[in-house]
Image (cartoon, rainbow, N blue to C red; front, side):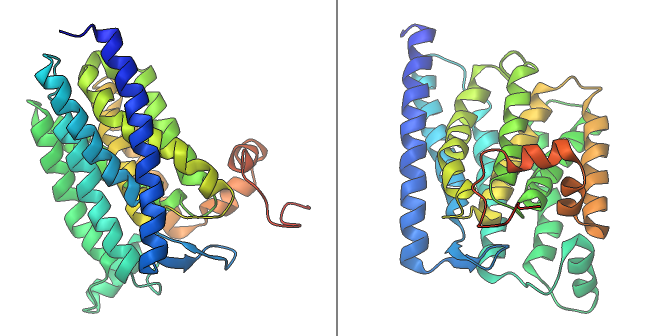
Length: 290
């Protein structure tokens, strides 16, 4: 069998190459199919380039199947694949047929109460059951832990989506979450397979970052939901069991806050958050003059 360090090196290089290919193909498809939309500044950009994340998850699954044939464990690969593809599909539906009039979870639920089914409402209705099914498969866990892990997956997808209001903000949040999962014992808790499966998505986020930061492409709901769900799953696999409920409550509080107030205003009002938000981002002319 190939030595573990050699397999790691091959997969780090191969995953980065596949991620770059996924982003390039996603950009081509968005331009070819006319998947464009205005950003916060009114610039019309390719709007669903984050379809590269579900594609990268497919690459991760294929890579894990190769590792399994070499005798390495690959039991978490299907979980990462399911989270990325399922939530990516819900996000893509929102990108292609979303209702711009309904804002936030409360807005979509109000529209649903009036008999108007929005794609945002469908995400809310279908997202949590899908997240719970993924968490159930990740076990065996007690029921409360399944609920907590499912909440992390669903809330992770929504929080990264909420952050996707300015260039590279959501990517920074997603990358920070994946690095946190790795740093807090992802490899020990989930086994090497967890990182093998998630690595192409992490690499895709790195490859997509300059496009997003320079306002030449947007990852869209498909990317934000896909990346966020994998971040939530990674944290559920990595963090100590007793820490997870506190994190889920924190993410829920952030969702509720964003339904009533602007996260952008909150970030702009705090120097540290503002500095992090602008880090690596190319401003429009005169945008940060103040």
